[in-house]
Image (cartoon, rainbow, N blue to C red; front, side, top):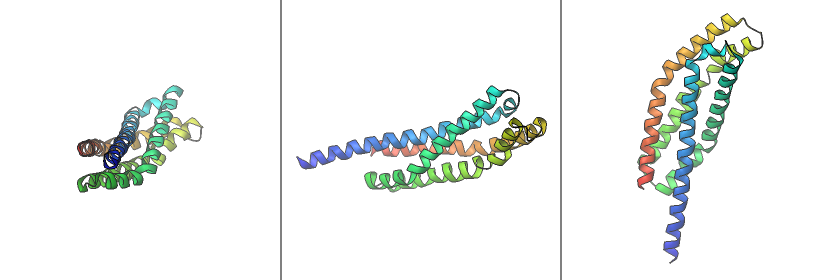
Length: 169
């Protein structure tokens, strides 16, 4: 009886972890894609306050999703290791961390502070001419868009693979 109860509790914990991991990772991916889409419309940010406010909302939402993923990443990896005991799942977790935090965030999004977000802020506060800021932001956004294409698709694929492994075990 105790073994069945323990198995039931472990299954419940795995289901909750699966839900938390899936939700956190997919939320990060969704917000990164929303930010990518906003970068494609960077010129609009310099033409209207509403577009700038929407861009700022996308940045804030991305940062929140990134913070959530980053703060829970080690715990998720440890939970996968303990509850699933699957080397392939452990490897996928490490790859997802590498792609999301290192490649996407640190490699592409973080540099936007200087190349895109800074010029938007400078134009909005009058510290830089709108035309010059727009040109700099457009160049930074274009570069980020090119860089984001593969990592976002790769992240989607790796999350799908991990969820497939975790859902079967």
